[in-house]
Image (cartoon, rainbow, N blue to C red):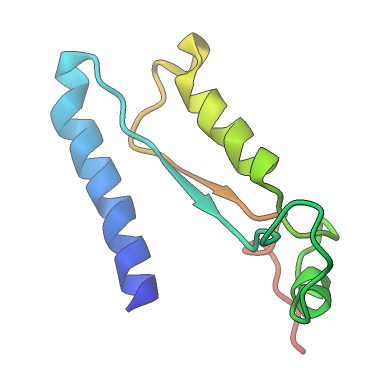
Length: 98
């Protein structure tokens, strides 16, 4: 169900971008990977295993996601619409077998 919902959000993003572009409205999506639960919190039991699967070598932070949202708000990105920006430290690019 979770994966289906994520897929639906991506398709909805593309469809809304198509419908709203003539009105000068952009629609984009940010897809976060594993994010640390609380900034500065003691590592949760699952963090080491999750981190081992992220080529960048760490979990994401709230600031990583915020930076992606800010990018979509910049005037320089006005021609960017219908996109999903994956913020996951290359987790999706390469997932080794464990």
